[in-house]
Length: 504
Image 1 (cartoon, rainbow, N blue to C red):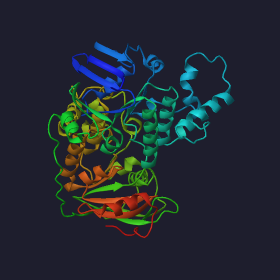
Image 2 (image 1 turned 90 degrees about the horizontal axis):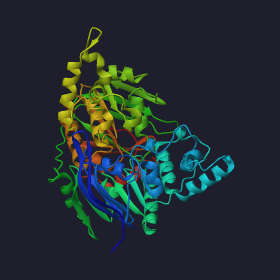
Image 3 (image 1 turned 180 degrees about the vertical axis):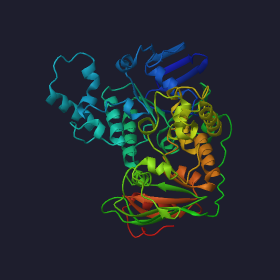
């Protein structure tokens, strides 16, 4: 039998009257990848925080390699060999420091280094970076890195501790396909070395690639386990949800009036110009690998950047927003990706986070009508299925998936002409993803909708039409029925070619 790295028995944790963990029993074997699946609010994040020393359990026993394990703080967990790479990338890095300091931060913080030799520190940092295939200048500030490279710095820092248990929380959410595959190769290597890995993800592509076993969690307790040579993925999802997952029934409607039209739009110097039409009543998914140009397109449409060339019209009138405020005034809304960096206001409650862009609509003369705010917040919490105690809960008390629902709800709470959703399913569970997708489609008849995603499954579940971007150019268009998958995948992974042109 495989040796248990971690054994959890009867774990309970409550926050006030909210019982989050309700007697968790779980074994994480050494040398295996245990995938933890759970709906948003199931208790996954709290379980991880107990294992990593952020929270103390109220009741229960944890054994690490057969010995009692009760870390007083994250530093104690780290010293014991339990290393966590959190879903929020900036939780694992210090943006204002350079890469070398980030990679050596735990060594610098333990008080053992009386004097810092910068040359030696950077040399050690390069060795740590090289171990995970991170080829960057270690003198660069982390704040200057892409989100994908920040994630790799956080993972490299974790690897430096030679962990007994490595906890990865949604680690591929900001990685390209190639970067994710490098991470998977590293996980394969660590598994072969006997490291226990707890991998938290909602991405079935990750789970199918990595999982030796799948543990399902529901309502603060373990609800299912599948292991062995043939994993029961359907059973794992059923155990996670407590019911069968609803199927997606896409009835593609006729196109409505043209809302947005782009003519000769050029996103980057050297990229191929393209035409684009976004009509009412149609949900358009824009797919492409990380860096393909999805965020460039969103930035141009939302007034965050100017195009290199081309012309935009909105409802037949010239449209050239200089700021997001101008875009919002014109009825163009955008839910940004990376909610903790670009969207969530940590000090605000759910209501204020939800209503923030539209405070004037909740005001009379110069006075804010909190009753109007609360009514809107309660309506959207109900419609989006946000798991919370009340609309006044601090936003950071919600799970990551429920925070994401609030950020999507923010921009769906008011009528728009063009709604841009950049990775709207980031961090939400499979059923919640489908529920959000159904909400997007059910409300699409009076606006144009652009959904920017990296996962093809997400595009297939929500879109009437799928557009493919590569290197800032539009290289493919597919109506979401009888799609030629080989062609679509080739368009995503190849440079722009003869498939680009006019699309409508």
